[in-house]
Image (cartoon, rainbow, N blue to C red):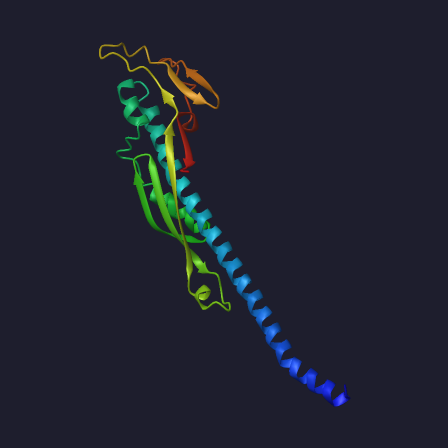
Length: 202
């Protein structure tokens, strides 16, 4: 092969080399964009989870407060444990706070009894990339948190004396804890987390 032929072959291969390198670079940038979008989506899901849990915990604390207020009236206990939150503040305000702390905005907050669904949108896009949609698209996510009552009791008879309160039996891990409540000494009462369990729905 002459030197002239070799130079001609090299000249023909160079554009192919540039095309291959350009293609590899494009794929690298595309994978990067996909990775950024996944990170953005995960961030939105974290915000949704935190917001839903915050709404549920806000209501749990409110219900526990109602129970403490009415601890001497056990006829009201069951309604409170069942989630009768009449008069409690809207928990969606707390959900919006937690979403904002995670750089997201609540698009929808739907409390239904002891179940709380929150949908959020990330405040930022995945950024500029070779995939045009990533510069304008914001990640969305939703989550559902639920409150589960942990305690049961035997309702008192209608003519029961107020100086005798029902025994409250609450789940505590793999065991149960019994609360013997003395109307004359209410210093040791269940905490909100003793009365209710808050978690994300599966």
